[in-house]
Amino acid sequence: MELIQSIDFQILDFLQEHVRNAFLDPIMAGLSYMGEAGACWILIGIILLFFRRTRAAGACLLTALALGYLVGDICIKNFVTRPRPFMINTGVDLAVHAPTSHSFPSGHSTAAFASATSLIIMLRDKKWIGFSALALAALIAFSRLYNYVHFPSDVLFGMLLGTVCGLVVALIFKKTGLEKRLSGDLKYKSEEREKKGN
Image 1 (cartoon, rainbow, N blue to C red):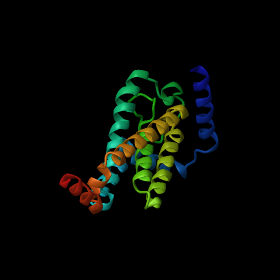
Image 2: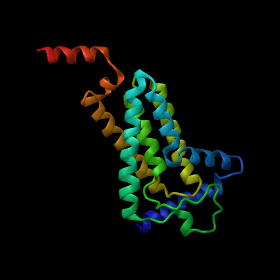
Image 3: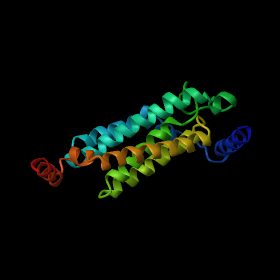
């Protein structure tokens, strides 16, 4: 654990010394605030619910978000109770407000990758949406390092956890037929009526 934390700090300190600047500060702060409590992803999920063709993707995104929050924020964070980097190295001036929750794993990264993964799988015919979401997810995850509020290992685990949550929920939606029911797939409804008739 000490070795991991040493590497974590080397990466964070490199970013502070060689990447952080006055131009990027407000951009990275904005990206972090966008991902606060999964806000931008919840908004995207709700918007998708309004349209029949994307309703299943919206429901899947919101379910994956909820699963990521339950596993990451409620369970793992409170079990590991890792302090955040700025609590250990108090000499860094934060460009965002100081979070009060534990550090491991990154909730922003979990939410971002759960959402992006679910969209990539559920909207395969609209690849630009999924990959745009993935690019935004990566930027939000990076902003947590830039803003010195998470260790790289927090973010990496959050990305992994979010990806798994997105995959699991999307597969459940597809395997159970929930995707087709929510999207109002007429062919699926016709097949279901035929099964009931037989």
